[in-house]
Image (cartoon, rainbow, N blue to C red):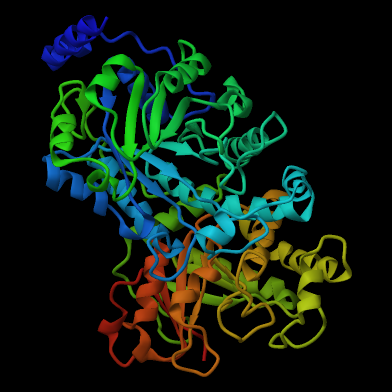
Length: 602
């Protein structure tokens, strides 16, 4: 038997690539999401074709280190790994897993895909009882009681709503990838049979498998993320990782069946994956430290890809092992001629975050993407502005509508800014108490009802504009990171961004208003006592979901080229960024690099 095995291995390794892949079976795996994009279908077909006949190489990277570890593999072997792995992170500051790295990570993912890489994304999600940023041990590896876990799985509960808000932030980034035409091997709640993550170690159909099905349903049926290939993942069995079949969510939720192995590649592990996959689904090694050997791959040929964890290409593998693996004929690296050619970028500009946006809204957003060199100003600052800012006054709807219509007919872009009065009846600048804020966010309370009533007062104006096919730049609840208004200074998922999300839901889903290009408008107030440092802007950013562009509100013109503005642009990723100045710029060149410049009404 041993002699036969060695003879088989030598025969396989001596086969030229053309012969090796000529024997590939016809792929028959179909995405579990019937609405999967053509690119996602092609990705699954590619993985399925490889499985059983070759193995794709892969390398994970930390979100705040961009492509460092994939680049290092190239330096060591002369080949880039075929699979580019990344993570959405959970921590803060300059940590390798910082959520501040998400926008640049998304940009790098798009670049890698267009360079020929296959994208694999993981998310070390925060406990729904916590707010980002967190530490790995205290939250990602934290504990939930059985009652808390059941609450997350029960629609309508406070913990379920917190879970919704957290997964919706990640959905926004995945939508950016969908808009860019990037399909993703998406691996949620990984290593779910292990007891070391808050989501894991709960066997049975009402345990972790139910949580996996819940995120699948929300991403597929609510957010219509059709660019995802769903990768179900367990860890190799151990005293702290239970039997894998007790965590399987069902065949209708899984495209790729995968295992993480840090140690020996036992035949029983492989057999358990094959048993679940049957003949119609590919299997993969989603995480490894030491790579499987070529002998292992010959004995376990259906592993479609392996992905080394960050830093472990060198710490767990010798230079000789890396050379042998990345130059083996049955191991496929990026830009291998057996893989499809890199996909060119789409010619269209990204669509609005609102999936039902009107044609006029699409046109308006495209104008922001393609007209970035234009400097515009407010109605009071120039005779021929491109963008005219209008404060939303619910008591003067008719007059405001007439002015916006006239501006739109003249080819101008209306910018509608809303600073609503306090639902408590206090002044717009009087902060709410913590108790009042909690009541404001709680459905059925007097304060929440007052807030909804305020939203409804602006519906007639927005409805008029939609019926007249007028799209507007819409900047509600500005300066959330400052201390200027009653909604300001409240970070985290239950802070001001919770109000933005609710406003977005009420206008788009309930009132069917789809003519709005949604702006998020942070303030950069300069070195004023009590102001928040730019590094904390991400604590207020609602995420890409529901945000089409950003507008920086600057009180000090000299801060335009400062660190704070660069921080906003980093959060924006590739989204357009405008500038709102509370005083005229002394030097027009300082406004370069923005999609528009708006001089606030004086």
